[in-house]
Amino acid sequence: MQKALRATISIIVVVAGVGGVALWRSRAAHVHQADFREAEVRRGDLVLTIAATGTVEPEETVDVGAQVAGRVDSFGKDKNGKAIDYGSIVDEGMVLAKIDDSLYAADVALAKAQVDQDKAGVGRAQADLEQQKAKLAQAEADWNRAQKLGPSEALAPTAYDSYQANDAIAKANVALSQASLEQAKAAAVQAQATLDRQLQTLGYCTIISPVKGVIIDRRVNIGQTVVSSLNAPSLFLIAKDLTRMQVWVSVNEADIGSIHPGQPVSFTCDAFPNDEFQGTVGKVRLNATMTQNVVTYTVEVNTDNSSGRLLPYLTATARFLTDERHNVRLVPNAALRWRPPPDVIDPAVRETMATNTARSHGGAGRKGTTTGTVWVEDGEFAKPIQVTVGLTDGTESEIESADLPESARVIVGQHVESMAASDPDSNPFAPKNPFRRRRPASTTRTNAP
Image 1 (cartoon, rainbow, N blue to C red):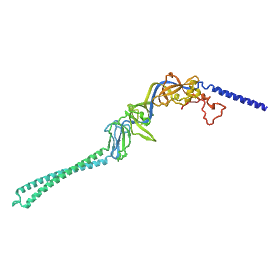
Image 2: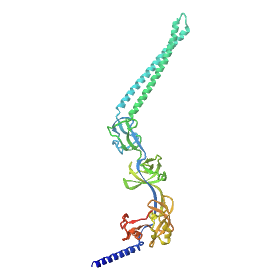
Image 3: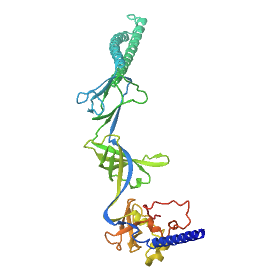
Image 4: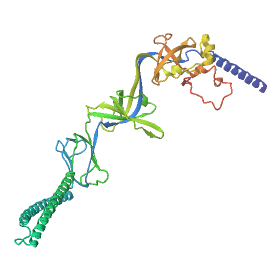
């Protein structure tokens, strides 16, 4: 009984093994039927862009500071009669804020008093000069008469010498009075300059808008004390014209050579995800920055903001248009990268192509042309077609080929099941590689270099 059971089990095992092998060979015999993944060659436009991020900035801003120290007493009024605040529209010469001026007003009063005093000193010196001139005239007359008489019985020698000395003293006193007058005038000028300076300082207590624009930042509050030392404290930031904006974009050094003034740029902002804005390159700043060994240049992109939708300091994602093609034949880059296994290649070219299955299409870059190979289905096999490859945007490439008809379908990959004939893991009786990662049956893969 046991021998019969053993014989029966042995027969079943042999039959199952023979059936498994037959099934595996049957699957391997049909590996080339409908096992390619294909994509259609289409006509379309190819646009090459350089992507970078930046910040929306006002085209021109003015930082209004304080030239004096003191407490902020009040804010001015805008066109609508409201206190100056964020978004206020201001005109040139409009009062933005006032700083406590009590100390500076006292300095002005003191300077005015000094001016008045020095002006009085000038008048006194002028009067003294006139008095000395009169004395000089009298001394000169006495001396002239003394000279006519000379030392004689009518004029004693001592009197003669006295008239001569008085004339000399009078001339010296006139010169001294003249110098005192000049000194008084200089002191008056100095006092007036001090007064003008104090008046100017007093005027700085009233913060005036230097330009017409919009307040985009108010950096002080009423009651806050501003301190002016080496750097003037900033009180307000004014944008002169928000209808013209700029996007300051950081561009990598590898791409900066493709950027030039006047170049079209499109950009989007997270605040308006469904809108695309247009602009042009204004200038490329030469002061590059380095962050973690990455060199970037700031590119100014000018854009119109007549609608007022763009707000200062929004983050923008910009795309610089470097090249474009219209109505050209396009294929997925996967079609240029894919290479078939040797047993799938058309027998007519298998011997030639099998030795070069790892060859790529030549590494076509963003610009220029090179040659490449795409594959089309020919029955159960893949047939190669040589093409000229032009521009690529990283997803699709421009191609030209007289051997590739319009609307042709090119192979971009091969289903996993199509590898059954050459995959040892597909044999149920072959030893399993414990380190080989199994893919789900529904997945596909593309042969790429």
